[in-house]
Length: 498
Ligand SMILES: O=C(O)c1cc(=O)[nH]c(=O)n1[C@@H]1O[C@H](COP(=O)(O)O)[C@@H](O)[C@H]1O
Image (cartoon, rainbow, N blue to C red; front, side, top):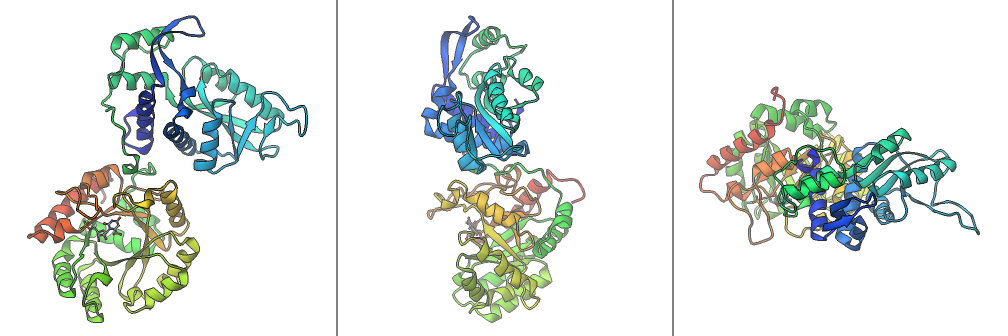
């Protein structure tokens, strides 16, 4: 029930699922005779859901998130025939990346004569996917077939638990039911969005013999939410001190200590085009920021004198130098570029890299530079999500793959450029651009949002602010404003020792 109001991706998936079901007319209102003979004012026909491709995808994604969050070990996914097969296929193949198994109702009279199709071996633990659970009878039939073949099946995931005794019956047989929705969440959603009134609520509760005493109204809008605006993972908050102890990245050790000392999680993006302008603002910004981000190739008079002055400022004023180079080539080319005309590895503490070229061209290459004391470079941020409208980083699965590369190389990859938290490892820091307290977009595709959304809801750690400061006539005033707002949003959810 609480999932319906949770400010998390799982909560939003649940709400969107109900919104789409409502739009797709899966909930039918009228007078319907149920199997029990009783008359119900509602009929929920989940068999219609896979007729709508977006609903099929949404349900499969939500089931996959439910499966992931239950931390159950399994080697295959079984769809309960027939209605759950589309969801099991999409969930297994697209989201969970696990083998799909199906059970037959009747053994074939020819060929292998198997009752279970797919790849498995005796002793494998599998999970089941079902669409609606009423009594649990069809699930138990499938569990019996699986057991007879030597498979272990102890967990079943369904879209809707009708709360008609199925959960208890399954529990008696040693099977745990995990459901995306139950009748209570469906009725609460319908009532809260004005789709049914209290009379209808009472009628449904009576017809289905449900044991609820009072209808609950929640603050839920009927609007479809943009799932990309929500964290990819619902990671618990970790204090900065704990992150500092936990991190394997030399860059993060330094940054987390600066953050706590300066009480700042602000990175200033100085996209000026002359070295003098950049240095002047860097000097004024020094006391308020933990990092200064530049695009060296946008500075028209870039030279070694500039990098020397910038590194002196950084050392004296305790901030890190961030070159936003976005490397994206083969490992060999990246090595050449790091040492090339701009000698990036010699003056930048941290650089950005895309992940499009794959892990073999990323982690090993940067590890070599980070381990070598001749270079200043001590960390890399992977581009997990871009802030621009229509960015291809939103393509299904891309961000998750980037997070995976970082998860496996936390000594080198110190975090992400992202819009929302993308990894469960809290020591990987989320740096987020696209922040402006006063404006929502520019004319070149940039999308901005406020600090509360970026830090509090989307669970980022560090905000990258550019024109919010650099276009202002009073940059120092803006720096103080962004520093305070971002820091307040960060420490709001943290233990007092920060
Ligand atoms: O890699 C980045 O820093 C970056 C990624 C992204 O998705 N969006 C984004 O705006 N940036 C950079 O962050 C800075 C944002 O500056 P403003 O748009 O002026 O606030 C610019 O330097 C961008 O190049």
